[in-house]
Length: 247
Image (tube, rainbow, N blue to C red):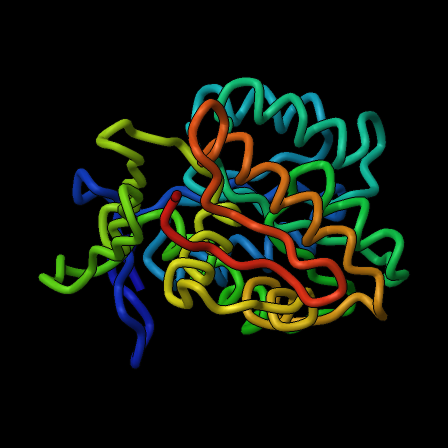
């Protein structure tokens, strides 16, 4: 299959300029990196790889990836350090952590430093691809625009196709996970959503009751959506969160 073609039964995802999606694979196991790269090229995506953290930062600056598959355990910098450096150059690039660690605490660590999703080894290639496709769709790599794609709550608007978010006309930049969290809140205006519901909808798995990742991302959203404005995101202690028009 040549680059630009896509596997059977798939909806093709492309960059806004029509070019193939770009994915950077960072793993110090050459066989695994090659296997992942081959599977991603089968999706019709452009792929580059790096075997350590410093190389990942260099390749990312040249390649400008649309998503990154990032191993946590690398021979020089760890994945969390690499993520911080990547985000200095591109604050919104979606990152899927890939690691042998399986503890709840490690999942939380990966997400609280800004990662968007987390897959543990051993994994299936299908799962990695499915999670990457979900992250890319959240980031605006979608199919044709739809007239009903704009959600509106008060003076806050969210375009599900272009991924533009505005409050009172002012453009707000969100990461892929922040966007997905806000979309869930806006699809359920004036409805109290529990931490468990938010974890299930936005991250697709729970954390054994450790839901502080939700509190963290709610605080990120508040800083961007409510800062200097009448608040729209509200906390109901012991119940959850809700979004409603500012009073």
